[in-house]
Image 1 (cartoon, rainbow, N blue to C red):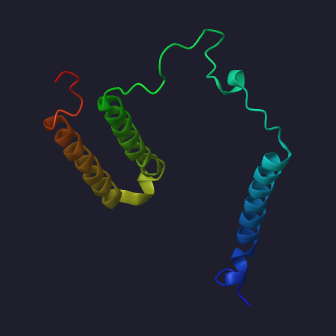
Image 2: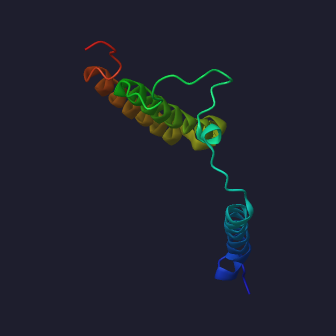
Length: 124
């Protein structure tokens, strides 16, 4: 019998997932039930390295920070997709080169669209 394509080949992965999930649930429930529940004013106060907290920590700030962070992550992750190509570029041949250049072209289209919408402009 060939175990490579049968569902039994996935049994170790399913068991590992169930053990990990069971461990997480058990430790969270145990810490909730066994842990101390003394909520004092000092314990609920935010910690600022010994400096007294001033004002509200929930002050809204410009959405541009979030936008720059999301764009950084987006383009950073897309660049990471080029590493497998760089490792196997000899085996992929000309088709691999065409595919990676089309990927880069798509990245540049997104980048120029972002610039045309002035997503990185701080003033306004």
